Amino acid sequence: MSSELSATMRDYLVEIYRLSGYDGESKRYVSTSALADVLDVSAPAVNRMVTKLKEMNLLLHEPYQGIALTEAGRREALIKLRYHRIAEAFLVNVMGFDWHEIHEEAQRMSAGLSETLVQRMSEMAGEPSHCPHGEPIPALDGTLLEPDDTPLSEASDGDHLEITRVRTREADRLQYIAALGLVPGAQIELIHAAPFHGPLQIRLNEEYRIIGHNLAELILVKPV
Image (cartoon, rainbow, N blue to C red; front, side, top):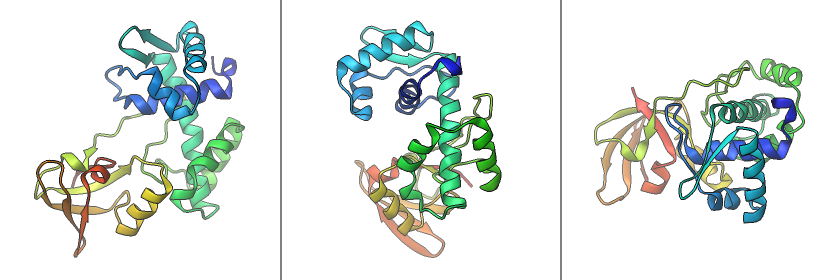
């Protein structure tokens, strides 16, 4: 199947995977309009590609629900994500890029990589298990153990937490998050979350930070 897929097809599958927030247990449908927005393409172009991917048994398309990946589609998406996340780790660990600079570069790099090159890049980068943003790197066969974490915005006052990953690729936000020290591996305590989606006060080491609810939704954590 992999050899039959174009780079554009793989991009579609990856973005559907990202939009769906796939948890490994259920198929979550996304709208074709949301897919068109994230790929910056027209609605007719999305519909044509969805039809092709459905014929290849990589997508489900349900009226009034949207589209979802089949198991085969999810596997192909994860193979593409493996290349992308290893490329990101290579750019940071070997080439010295910052984490806010690498998404587009890795996107371009991963489109033309072979598995041989990807494996060599992984070795040079120190065999990373996660990308610089904390996302796990899928296995060679397209399998992935989904992280058991939740958004910081859902934590309770007094929780002691470890940041596992950051779910944004916007350069400005990544720079801001890094400046606050809220990177994967950091351990924090939620001091207080204001009601009605108000700001959160957290403690990192002996310093205090205040962040907005919208930013907290993008930071994933697990209990320490």
